[in-house]
Amino acid sequence: MTKQVFWTKAVLEAFISEGNLNPRQEFIIRTRVLGYTIPRQAEELHLSVDQVNKDIAALKKLYDATQKHSDILPPRCKNKKELNKQV
Picture (cartoon, rainbow, N blue to C red):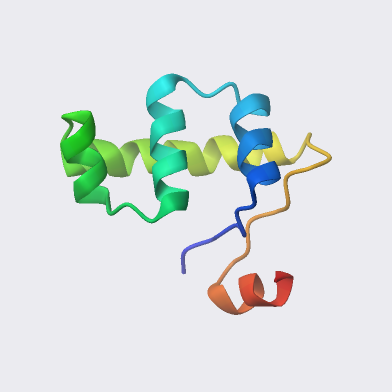
């Protein structure tokens, strides 16, 4: 199952800042939070869907590494049921 985070403005801004995201990574994470589909992100970035998926996978790894040292970032949930408990 996909791991997830309940994205608030504070969590989003903390991840962008603490994770030292580049402009493409920042665009991907901001638009994911806004609900853009992967094909839409790929189209707007002029990338393949496969490349956007690779970038998302890299962002998940970066989030996990950044979260270990952050006072703001919550751990990613293992499923939507856990995510709903956070809300």
